[in-house]
Image 1 (cartoon, rainbow, N blue to C red):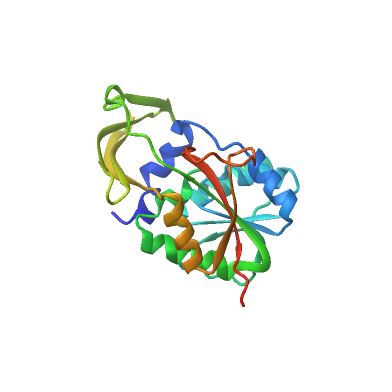
Image 2: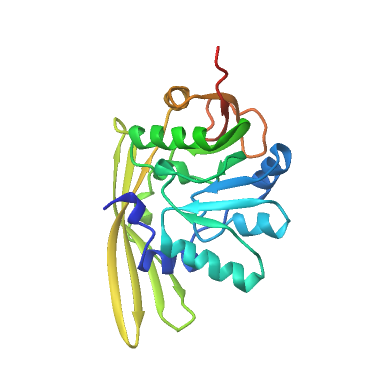
Length: 251
């Protein structure tokens, strides 16, 4: 399926109740406070950490390819009394009317782009929407294979209407050459009124540091720092890093 269609329908419904963790807002709040707003979060999903940043009074807008996830973000914003501005667009085809001093992604969002060509297109759109003195923050990670004992393990939750929600990894393939890991996820919703079950492939695509730097350079961006989540220089062995990018200087 088209990766942009993954977080729709039953997946969007189950995502919130069954997500394994929420993004820590601190690194992104610190980034926006340091660089200055307005800021843009790409792949904002159902609102973590965007809603927390807005609660803190930071000027942050959001973009996501899933209209269903944005609908849930707006519902959460209304419940929390937070005003938000969000756009339904793909990051690789981003076309907004303003530029931003700060653009960021939270967590592993960039690895959801399925290949280097799509990643390059996204980086070019990031460059087009950065101010000339702006900074982009792109977290990257190399996924670990799902442990064998976790294949088939079912996580459950209950929806507000009493339905049982279930998600499990039923199979997984890893291609080191293509730098992809594809998990086949089963989503289930069981209610007295009926049940629905869907299986969808969840593709993660990772980048060696030199490959990502080359893609950034091709997009007109320069890597200015590679840090850990706390903003400290990342070791060469680190598999979870934050890239900071700025527009390349023309000569």
